[in-house]
Amino acid sequence: MRSASETETAQDLRFLLGAGSPLGGARPKSAVSLGDDRLALAKFPKPDDTRDIGAGEILALTLGGQAGIRVAEHRFVALGTQSVAVITRFDRGGGDRIPFISAATLLGLPQGDTCAYTLLADGVRQFGNDVPGDLRELWRRLLFSLLASNYDDHLRNHGFLMHEPERWSLSPAYDLNPVPEIDRARMSKTAITEDQAEPTIAGALAAAERFGLKAAESKKILREVFVAVSGWRKTGRQLRLKASTLDAYASAFEHPLMDEARRLLGR
Ligand SMILES: Nc1ncnc2c1ncn2[C@@H]1O[C@H](COP(=O)(O)OP(=O)(O)OP(=O)(O)O)[C@@H](O)[C@H]1O
Ligand SMILES: [Mg+2]
Image (cartoon, rainbow, N blue to C red; front, side, top):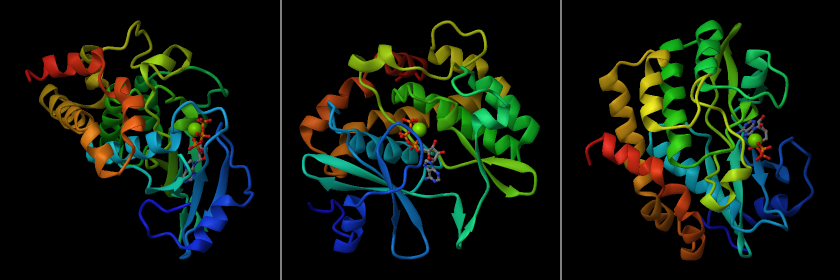
């Protein structure tokens, strides 16, 4: 096994291979100490994975950062033919625990309930700390999820941290996973609005008002997200992901919604 960034120590890698505590969610994970006072989650491959999920997550987090989203700190470690995604925990600050709740909890919705980004925006308005900033961020994340095919954006994949007493701030984005065409039908997701039929970029632009955005501002954000997602292959190569891994994700980044965004941006 070799660390892709060549920065992890043998001790880190032993941690990764050891049995860890379950942290919830669908993928096998382990708690990892990064050697300083930071903790991380290591997300491992599953035997039935048909593509390198860890590499896809690291690619999506990297592209998300390039698209201007506040993403969880991340790095990947090559493990045979697959990758381990190592995500720094954002709910710890200097040894203390920062209170964290999922969007399902913020909205008081039972697990498994479907939702819409516009309802999440209403939750931010009601309980948020930086309401305009988090609404803008949420809209950017919505566009990114559409353009990078992050179709597993259910209510437990959005979270909030309490930095100020009794006010909630969007946590860094986590669990971003590009889903290629072949798997899309099986995935659930958060709709753009309560009454949305088919997700479209035009529909997202029409809903931007609910996020406090004027037309020019929403177009600017769309352009930034589009440019970042368009560069997915170059970014993947810079991350030194294998060509076959990138090919497996191509349809997650090149699809009709990207064509629609390109048209709307006049590119
Ligand atoms: N960087 C982080 N810091 C603190 N908590 C986190 C972090 N990343 C994820 N979590 C928490 O751990 C849970 C599981 O992580 P994550 O969603 O990445 O895993 P998953 O197994 O892929 O989940 P899913 O069931 O959505 O497929 C999240 O729902 C969230 O509550
Ligand atoms: Mg999750």
